[in-house]
Length: 320
Image: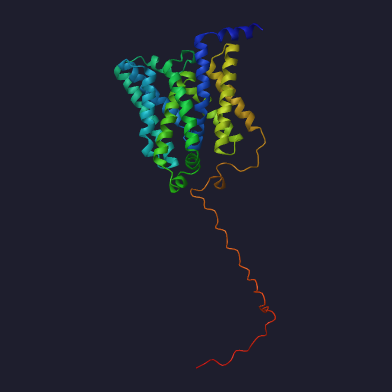
């Protein structure tokens, strides 16, 4: 009873309320970003953006600007820069590997040459959910609106792109522009989640709800809805549990999301077809089959002899 009263007292604090509100906003947009990460098969994007965010934080500390704003800008520009390299599904993973290597090298070089406190830069990557600021709320709130709206507006094009890039391109989907938008959103989302859980635990907000949703949903729409529902449930439960036990929220969120993923994997697999099957992807221009013309029935005229009763007349010699 005392513990429940303590949790209630903690929820009256403004930093705790801001942290809970930030988690609710993150529960709407970031699990959908996880669906994109799984669909495009760009698992290394989390590590690549972590290193890019470190570079942006170092630039912010060096110039005196807000480190998280610099991290967001660096991640957004990096996501747009690797788009030309992502011409194939395998090119996406290769581009992320290249970006990760270049970003960490540039960050370490900048920290060494400029004399910026490296411990201060790396400490921001661990995250502190109670230090959520106005910029974090604006970013998470924008993602909570933009990401679901994009899926609703271009859900057919996204279904084709996440199913097969070449099929989407042949079907008239603007693959290049859509990939650019998706990579920028993924990069900004990863950077925006760093404050909540830290870079190493960002999977709790993005990837883990998406993995559970892929097991439960059989269409892209149902997967997105499942991801959002699981994200809200996991974040609220993990946050309250962390307050109740007085544990760090980041690891508790990851363990809670991981428990949900494991529990979902134990459910019996349904026999319905997956959204990735070719039959489940709608065609570009569906054409209904033309109805065949009905056969005309010839009715005999009144008083006319029936064809079955007319005697056959042998053909005479042909005229020369």
